[in-house]
Image 1 (cartoon, rainbow, N blue to C red):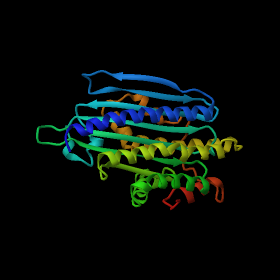
Image 2: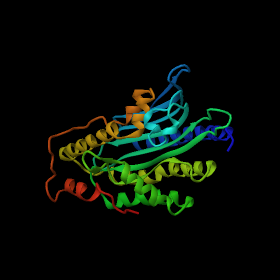
Image 3: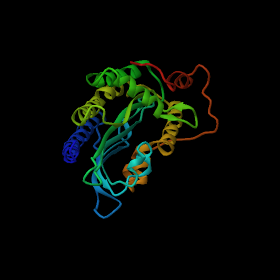
Image 4: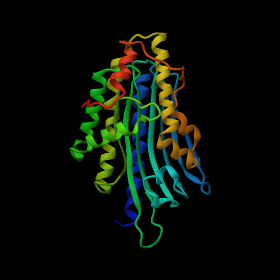
Amino acid sequence: MGASEPGRVGTEVVAYLASLQASIVAAIEAVDGQRFRKDAWTKPDGEALAGHGLTCILEDGAVFERAGIGFSHVTGATMPPSATQSRPRLAGRRFEAMGVSLVFHPRNPYVPTVHLNVRFFIAPATDAEADDIWWFGGGMDLSPSYGFDEDATHFHRTCRDALAPFGEERYPEFKSWCDRYFVLKHRQEMRGVGGIFFDDFDALGLSRSFAMLRAVGDAFLAAYLPIVERRQDRAYGERERAWQALRRGRYVEFNLVHDRGTLFGLQSGGRVESILMSMPPVASWRYDVRPEPGSDEARLVERYLSPREWA
């Protein structure tokens, strides 16, 4: 593969990511009734990380207490440790990265938190004989405070169907990867009911791998909005909000301790406000909380926070 081909595809990826962000913003505004604040930013050339992006944030909405979706396209002089952990030969190499990442924290505890990320990396050739190295990554996962089989099944089947044109093995592989990745290792507990996750992906070639990335991004609204519509008007009280805040605390723990995307952004000198917009507006930690046996809270822990076949 010539050195110019990943760069050409990179231009197409940037255009797709910008359109994906715009379409999701429009759909969430229609559901919530409130507009996103749109914060365009640039990091000038000459800094450790240069580029531009658009951070869209909705706070204190009718449906979403916080919904953040960011687009970024940056270049850096040195690949950060979080990106070279699985590719040590890239240490010290410059890079180009582009992606869309979102986390939505609904107000109603019965509506699950959701995460989506789609991204493309290029490590340009270092001399006339070396090739560019590129890969795609991303996925989506669902983190409910209260579990419903119907919701988990719908989310996973939508992910499965999106990946089906790219090989029957993709969904089982990426579902298993998600189950292994989104785990609070210090608690031996999954973050939620999972979904799909992949990284360092180039197995289908450049154009076909990009098509798979588009399929994942395009499936997000179909995977998530029907769940929002089913749960957003369900009655709740202080007990449910308190449990939601505890579960959000677990979400914060994962993002700050384990998440490679958060570490990549912070280690590479990224824009802190955009990186940490995934944090919930309200979260809590209480000592040694144990749900009441037989309660809906206990059911979440017992049934929904360990790997299970949902599709």
